[in-house]
Each structure stands twice: as structure tokens, then as C-alpha cells.
Image 1: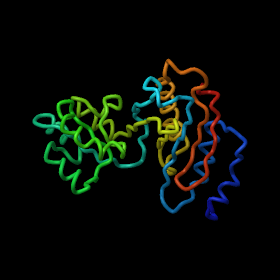
Image 2: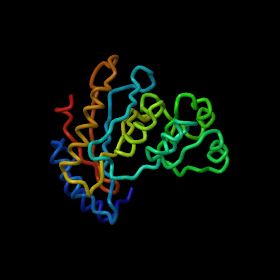
Image 3: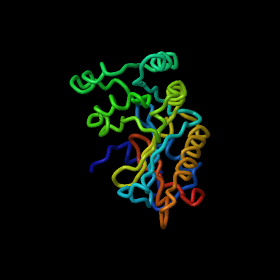
Length: 230
């Protein structure tokens, strides 16, 4: 794969044989975010889990202390008082049954996160085939199936992110923007790692965290030492 000039230059700042301390890794990643837009800094965490076993699936959510730097559009499936609550909490879209054809047939996806009250999951379940592959299906573990829609919407707006294993047992999550200070990125990263450590499956034998890499949207990845997180 041919890399652009900026990527090649940035890659010179990274020693691929080294696992950097968190502060050094963040500093390098920030320096390497040289695109014309405010790049997202992502963490890629390779685990020793086997997601094919239900008890080794990792899925959850955590509120990053400094948010993600991205404004998030929330859709809430609720009715009656809960719908009013969702609107008051700042959800961009609130509705029920009438939204199904709009999403299913018209391909409407002007939202980033979906929240639902438990009584609406029968309705939302009909959208499983469309929302599932996009990672938008509400889930109790992620706190997106709840009666407390006010807290759910406020947490999401405050910078709540979901983490889960992909098919290769890696977790990919944003920890902020390149414009964040190193301290803000370090706080967010530490909060994420604390949550992921807590989520370690009890049935797992062997190494839990195999490797951690931080990378800006357009730049090379920087390996982070796993020692302090083990």
C-alpha cells in the first residue's frame, strides 16, 4: 500500500520496535496528526479473548472525562412521558413505530447512537438487520436500553463511548481529538483502560491485553506499553 508523503514523514518519528510509555505515545501521536482537519485519536487494543465464546465477549460503555470532541446525534425510541424526557434531555430525534419505515425503506441514518426504553425493544428489534451491522442496536450492557433516558442521553452527550470486541478480538475506540491537550488525552485513555481492565472475562486463561496502539486518523500507530495495565 502506497503511503502519502505526510504519513511517511510522520512514520520517521515512531520506532516500531518500542512500546512507549503512555505520555510519550500520546505526545508522538499528537505530533503526527498533521492533516488539515482535527484528527481523531483512536486506541486499538488487541486482546487474548476469543469472542466466539459468549463468556469471553467484551462489551460495555464508559464516559470519557473530556468527551470525544465529536458532537453526537441521539435517537431515542420511547413513548409518552419517556419521550418527553428524552426531548428535554437533548435527544435530536424521538419517536416510535413511525420511524421504522423511515429507517428501513428510506435509509435514514442521521443519528450516531440509538437509545430505547425496554418496552420499545419489540419495535426496535424489527430494525435488527439494519441497525446491527452498523453497531447501532441498543444494548442493556452499553446502557442504551434503559428507563432512565435522561441519564442515557446526558451521558452520551458528555462523551460516553461504547467498546466491544470486533471479529478479530480487537477493541477500537476514540479517546479524543488531536486538538486535545496531552493531559486530556491521557485522562481519557486511563479511564478507558480502567473500564476495559474491569471488563476482563473471569474465564480467560493467558494474557488479556496483547497490545495497545494509539493512532491519529491519518497517521501511523504508536505502540503503548501494556505493563502498567496488566
